[in-house]
Length: 129
Image 1 (tube, one colour):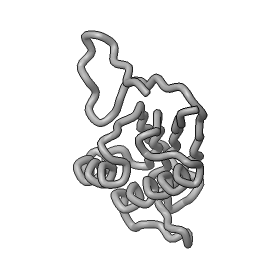
Image 2 (cartoon, one colour):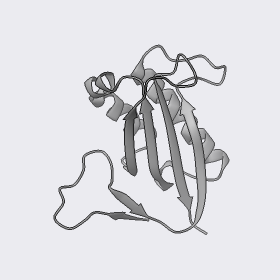
Image 3 (tube, one colour):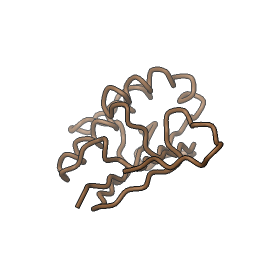
Image 4 (cartoon, helix red, strand yellow):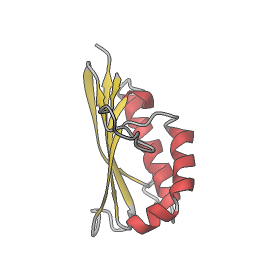
C-alpha cells in the first residue's frame, strides 16, 4: 500500500489524497452508530465510535485489519456538528483505527435510511494476495 500525494501539494490533514494498493478487496457497506442490539449512541461522537467499531468487526470477520483500509466515505446529517467535534472524533478514530489515514470523503446529507443515524460510513480494505 502506498500513499499517493501529488508533488507540490500541501499534505491533507487527517486523510490521504489517494492510496495505491494491490490485493483482494473487502467492501464494507454503510455502517451506522448502533450496537449489536440496534441501540444508537445519543450523539455524533458516540455514533462515530460505534460505527468505526462496527467497521472493524466486519473487517476482522473478513480477515482484514484497520490499517488495510484504503478508502472511507462518511455521510453525515450535520456537517457543522462534525466540524465542531473534530477533536473528539479524531481521538475516537485514532483509538479504534489507529494512526492510519486512508483516502476519505465527508458529505452532508439530508437524511440517512435509519432515522436515528447521524453518521454512516462505508469503507474499502485491500488485503495482500
